[in-house]
Amino acid sequence: MQLTNRTACIRAEGFIRQETAKFQTAGLLIWLGHLGRSSLSVRGSFRRRNPRILAMVNPSFALPVTLRFPVLTETHSDGQMQWIHDEELAGTLEELMVWTFFHEFHHYLCYTRQRTLDLETRANAFGFEMMRKFKQGRDVHQHVAKILEPALSPAQ
Ligand SMILES: [Zn+2]
Image (cartoon, rainbow, N blue to C red; front, side, top):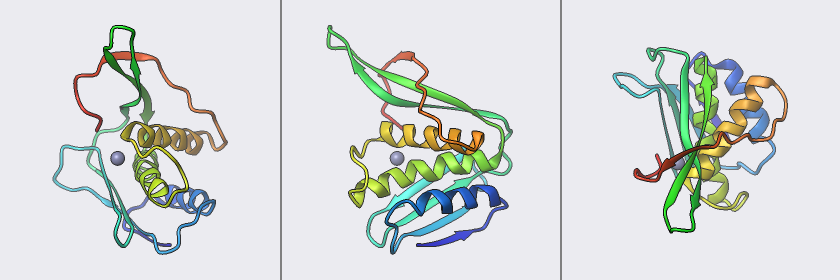
C-alpha cells in the first residue's frame, strides 16, 4: 500500500493507516487530496485496475455538515421499495475524509474479496461506521437512523 496525503488531515491519515492494516492492501494506491472549485463537500473514487482510491475533501465547504446517505433498502408487502437513510454530523475535514475514504475502501475490499455485497448502500454504511469509530475513538456498532423515504433516486 502506498498512501499520499496532500491535505492537513493527519489524524484521518493515521486512522486510515491503522484500520487498513487489518486487511490485505498490497498494491493499493491511496491519494488523499483537496477538492477545488466544486459545490460538493467530498468526492471519492475507486479504480479496479492497478487499484487506486481517491478521497477528496473540499476545504472551502462550510462545516459542520450532515452527511445523509441510504444504507439499506426495504421492500414492503405492496412491493414498494424504500431507502433507509443514515446520517451523522461531520464537524471537521478529518471526519469527512474518513467517511469518504472508507466508502471507497469498501468497494476495494469487495473487489479483493475481503468483504461481501459491493453495493453503494453497504459502502455508505461502512463510511458511517468508520466515521463514528474515528469520532469516538473506539469501536461502535453501526446505528441506522430509521428515516424512511420513497426510493425515487438512485444511490449516490
Ligand atoms: Zn461507491
